[in-house]
Image 1 (cartoon, one colour):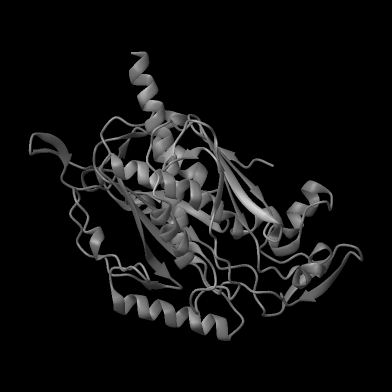
Image 2: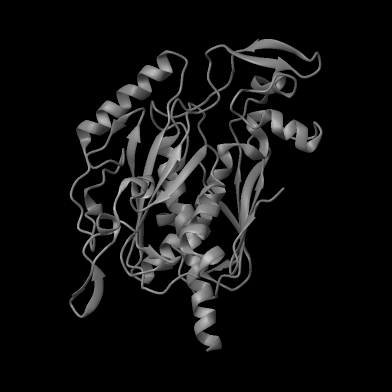
Length: 364
């Protein structure tokens, strides 16, 4: 399975949803970087299940155990390895999925790809549970980026058609402190409408999706490469590794297709002795390279495919159509818990780019 990411750092994620443990290894990290495990745990808690009525009732502490790579609060240059032990599994809820795949899930394609040898319990390696180790790596990268003055923040832009307020953000300094903590939106009223949509979906045996908007501030100009090494490419690659992601767009995204050049272009200006743009329709990236403005992108998350409402599926053994109502514990909306996952993915991509930029500078 392709579960490794990175050109200058190497992130590998392992485990299955209901296996003994899930975890990650992170190689290529310089020695001497500080690591605050308490700050990391606070970040991981944002993604952890079973904390509120809009997530799965499955409860896991998601407290990582580091096996290597850290010494006395700093990286030591060795590969960083961490595991999270699964403690609250109910694999019996998934016994029928080897024969009757869930619509919208990877059950069928995994059967075809791996010949029936994959672990179907909880989705196995295809489960959103695997975003926990992604958040370990991303939480560490967020700390190291913060040391450089680079922040990675995200909010819920929409859920089930309910849209967060589009406040007038300063292109140079978005007011990220306005994002809520417990439910990350700008508008508490919009957040309440979203929660009502989630509650309605749960009551009806349904699920809903939404959109997450991510902001990366403090980046210097000149990061990234043209064409296949562009910042958009590197971020999109890891973000599409998050289960349920169906679209990624930067800056004004799809709206650029309906604008004129004079509307879409970001005019250049000088402020405080540095070159800036008056707007940020490009999302901080030109030609795959950062221009010094905040990098902004949006990620569309589909509705959770595991729903208790009856759906049509097939019996693979009998080769006939059948009905399926999914058992188990699932999020009626994974968008709120996916916010830190998107932040983690973005932080890993940016830190990987920075490591490459540093190496290029040294070669020169």
